[in-house]
Length: 92
Image (cartoon, rainbow, N blue to C red; front, side, top):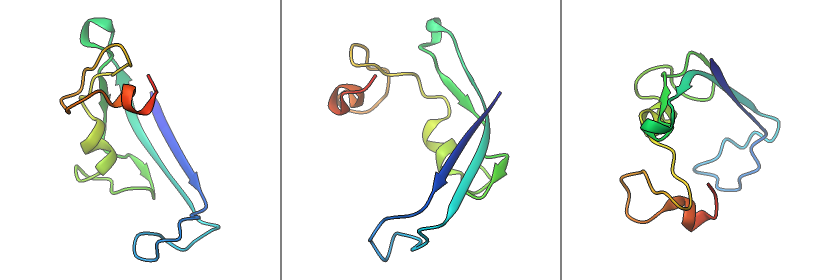
């Protein structure tokens, strides 16, 4: 299964961190699967397989930050960080 993320336009005003391309279009494809409840719906994701959103290597930040992570909900914290990010941000 393939996950596609598309971003349209950069409206950020930080001149050092932003592309300054209000008409820009960035996209990326990743192969992914989600495990069952016994593994807390762990995400397995490949480095990017196509697109211009990130590097297509193991240095792909989306891959690095998300591969092997378990789903966290407001009532069940499965990440290794201090506090519950789902509770903090009011999302499941």
